[in-house]
Image (cartoon, rainbow, N blue to C red):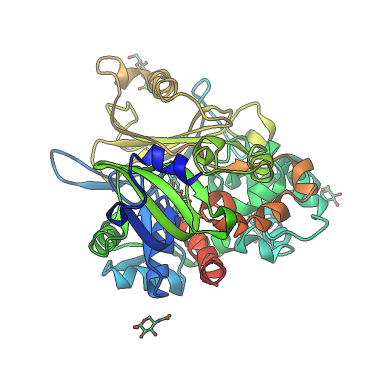
Length: 452
Ligand SMILES: Cc1cc2nc3c(=O)[nH]c(=O)nc-3n(C[C@H](O)[C@H](O)[C@H](O)COP(=O)(O)OP(=O)(O)OC[C@H]3O[C@@H](n4cnc5c(N)ncnc54)[C@H](O)[C@@H]3O)c2cc1C
Ligand SMILES: *[C@@H]1O[C@H](CO)[C@@H](O)[C@H](O)[C@H]1NC(C)=O
Ligand SMILES: *[C@@H]1O[C@H](CO)[C@@H](O)[C@H](O)[C@H]1NC(C)=O
Ligand SMILES: *[C@@H]1O[C@H](CO)[C@@H](O)[C@H](O)[C@H]1NC(C)=O
Ligand SMILES: *[C@@H]1O[C@H](CO)[C@@H](O)[C@H](O)[C@H]1NC(C)=O
């Protein structure tokens, strides 16, 4: 195996100047990988982060208008008011401020045909009462915000399609707002209730009432730029790099990884790996996975989530948030794939669109669908100058899910048992939820096991 690694590396492993030796190799520099690397440094562990893009931050993205220099955060917007969030921002000198989510004028449109939903909610009942009823249901499962550490047997309510759960507990009135908590979850009524409760959990409900943190400079990427500078200075980061082969400590030896970098292949020798990229089979391909690992990871299906800023969007300048709701769908959830929400970005004249899908779609298909849908919904303004993307971003694959039968059969217990298996640990959204703050909390719990 070592010979194979050396052959891929094009390097003679006897020449130590080619080998990067670290305690921990972290794969991916998004919310999870960046936080893990910084905290491992605090624990006196030497680290190397492998990030395939030219920047840290992952889904945290900030667009800078090339003409005016104005900035708009097009990915991660907010964090929870937690000490670990405050401490992480303060160590990198990025000031935070608190923000309230305001129910700015919301218009409901069926994006399949442009029809306005008059008198929405068509879902019967009292919104306040229904939201309280949903919160009471969530309170039965306080462990959900910590990860996927589910009881055995898994409560049957968590396994039923969320649409059935809404019907069972008379929550239909809450469906006026609940779809907006589940951006990127696809057709939320058809998936196990577990997944809806993971994206719209108690911490989220709490923060909606009491406020979130956001950055005072309105530049959510700054924290990652500062972390990037610190990690580069400590020789702990390889950008524009990816793993091409791995040997995970067979015969009790250290882990060896071959990484493709802009200056050629390098060999890394480490005690442990933290895998903090989406766990698709494609991404796992070069990680020497065994049949047990493959059997679990191949059960995942993933949703698609895309965003962009449009010029000439055709949306009237005075429009507030426009949200997609199906005229004829169960509980009026958006019919996907489609734009599910749009609002004016922080940059004058640029409209942000959010596009969701139950599967990952080709990028050109999504871009085309967004442009033609905007032209259809806002025909007058887009008649002469068509909408054009100032920036487009795919956040796909986004939510990782398995069928309820797999959850029932102990999928997440087996996934959790993989932590540390053959020197590899896992972090990031698929193992927790699409929430940076809760991912960081999860990592605080994971790292003592990594360094043990
Ligand atoms: C539009 C949008 C808005 C959001 N808003 C919020 C919000 O307000 N608050 C919040 O907490 N969360 C928000 N989220 C959720 C957010 O995605 C998560 O909080 C967080 O980014 C997930 O972190 P992660 O590290 O798991 O994944 P990512 O942030 O996606 O990081 C993965 C990293 O791995 C890199 N990578 C991928 N493949 C490879 C490879 N093969 N080799 C090397 N590197 C690789 C990627 O380039 C990336 O840097 C939002 C998401 C989206 C899409
Ligand atoms: C890390 O090393 C420093 C300097 O040697 C030491 O003061 C500190 O206690 C160590 N921290 C941990 C968590 O081991
Ligand atoms: C909804 O229920 C709350 C709490 O019981 C009540 O105060 C409010 O008036 C109700 N709203 C409507 C529109 O009936
Ligand atoms: C739901 O509403 C119906 C009719 O209003 C009522 O009979 C039923 O008890 C309610 N169920 C729950 C779980 O609240
Ligand atoms: C679009 O233009 C037509 C014809 O001028 C007009 O009747 C209609 O009200 C306009 N629609 C909007 C949404 O502005």
